[in-house]
Length: 185
Image (cartoon, rainbow, N blue to C red; front, side):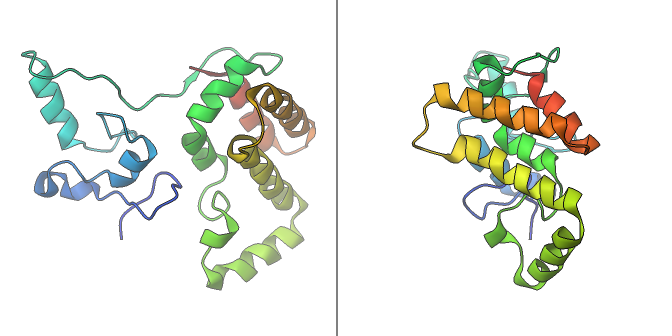
């Protein structure tokens, strides 16, 4: 029960309609994604009663907001990905991955329900486009999950991924690559 805006390493879920009753823990999945943020609502339709309390206390000077969940900003598309492109991609990796492919394909293999795995595998086998999307998703995820790779190596890896995405004939993948090129902090 509950929604998951972001794929986190735990089972946290959002229970938005219950905010008034449970007093601020209604956006628990968002909290586990951005644990140091005072504002937990990240989608326009989410209601965050805790944020209202904090803002109400901030107005007379009883509280100070130090950190809120980052918002992905898109600037002009840069011709070459660099560390200024890589940093916001890593910061916004949950949001970007959620936008990459909806429902089952933005999830890791072990999270897909067993009764759906055969159907997903069969669909991928019959569609080279879908298989490419899944493979590219995994490559992108590996860019920020590899622990033994320094930041200097991640930039060329990102550049190679973007070149590969742009050279496919999959419009959605090309558009996603452009969005990554435009990511800014």
